Image 1 (cartoon, one colour):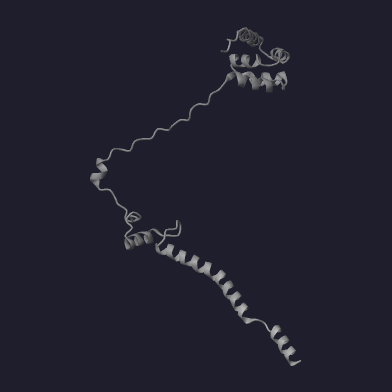
Image 2: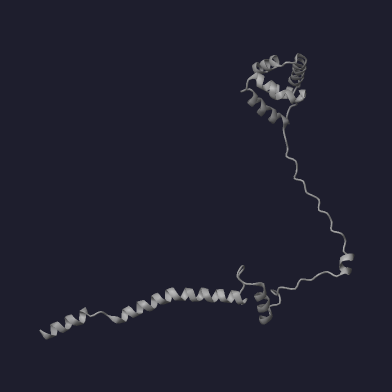
Length: 182
């Protein structure tokens, strides 16, 4: 019976060796990245490694001198031109603004779209809007509209001479024979 109790006591005792191993692994997992990140940050601040935004220009120049890296050396001195250099230079050339190319327009498409809008308006409103239009432009848009609405617009015009002139221009536009497309 004494042997049985000893066995039970040995089995229930915690194993200390595994607990120490877990603590060491956890400590390494947490501390190692912090040490590596801190070392990289310190190296960047001293100019040993270049990290944009962290490495100061003086540190880069100092590190370039220390490590013989002549390509990355930054000239920190501001050089002012002498009078001879200033007088010998040509006056700066004025840059001409580059104008973007004019967009290609098609008056036919524009007139059709405007005619579609005007087809949904009252004739009196169209007369008021088109009061400042040139007769040629107004006639071109009217030629693309529905004939019933054009008749109402011409009848609503206060100046019968302008209405007659627009009617003649609409007739001229409608009488043009389209060229065959090749």
